[in-house]
Length: 221
Image 1 (spheres, rainbow, N blue to C red):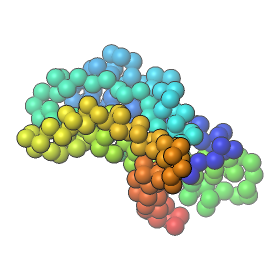
Image 2: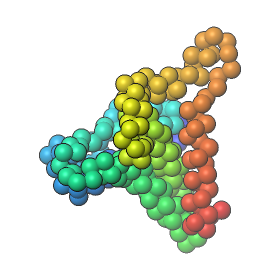
Image 3: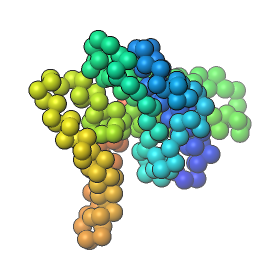
């Protein structure tokens, strides 16, 4: 879904998408009474506060990635702590979906209202096209229920307490599982086997549905 030649569209889109994703986590946690993100300087729209080098590079070259996790302290949440952790985790993917809707709406407005197709219009058409896709990819990727992704905390909020051993097991091995899925095509290639990209399909199929749905919503399908 990504083109290296389109890096001047992709990088700005990635920076905006990641920044608002992490800001949303911090903002919702702060609304629940947790000042940890604010005290760490993460309740900010400054991209430098949020970008992770490896996560950003992977998003550019592999199509999925992450930013620095926003620190939270659930002990500030008081009652309904489990539900509030889930909502804080859900805030990032929801922010990305909202960004995708806004980007698609601006793209629709541009395509319908622009008089002529000069270099500026062309740039923003390309930018918003990438912006929609990148935000949808980020939302879907982060909803995968494997730590340290947001989906694992959302799953924890949905599971009954007597099933929490599933989350504890995933916490122990989650990052290893995620790395294995990321590099599975390369590993299979080393042994001369078909390069099956399981993680790519897990992300690209629902992300494609999400993009199509958003374009339909704004009248671009």
